[in-house]
Length: 115
Length: 111
View: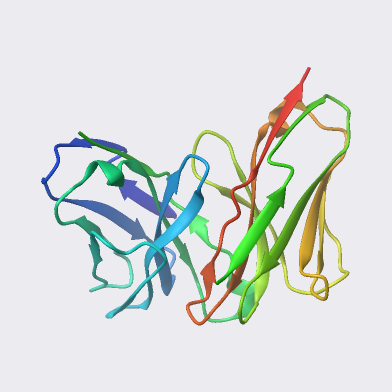
């Protein structure tokens, strides 16, 4: 298993540009989520999905969209990038059905810089 | 609002020392508490705790949860330079079964 994969690893955008961060997992996990990590602020949940076709907002959803058309993929879209979105983005997934499988596994991250 | 406080924020020790990292939390619909280690990349899973008073161990690391007092501790004995990292505590709860992360404890182990 490849686990949780993310692309790209690095990205530089100009203010106003749009882009999609890709996330995929091959573990048949139901639960997937996106976090951003900023210095001194820890990891904050952007959006999450409890299964294909179901998404919901986390703590900091503004400026981001997600979709979950398949179990494997959970892309994060930045509609109009702003410098405040400069951050490291992590995708995570877990099986999700039972308490014993709550462990979330993280992808390697995408470092995004918005100029 | 869900809240997680980790202490200390940073810690510098020498190899061989024992350290205790603290995590206090307030989350609705608590399910479990997870500890992660983060070096210069993605967080990697250490422990998941669901029951009070039951210690989980992995080598030199151990952790315990107190659901009555709403805290958890992570102990590392005989520290090594490879233990240098940020240690993140994350209770899982809420209707979204989401992880709420603390800001972490930055541990530096000097040779």
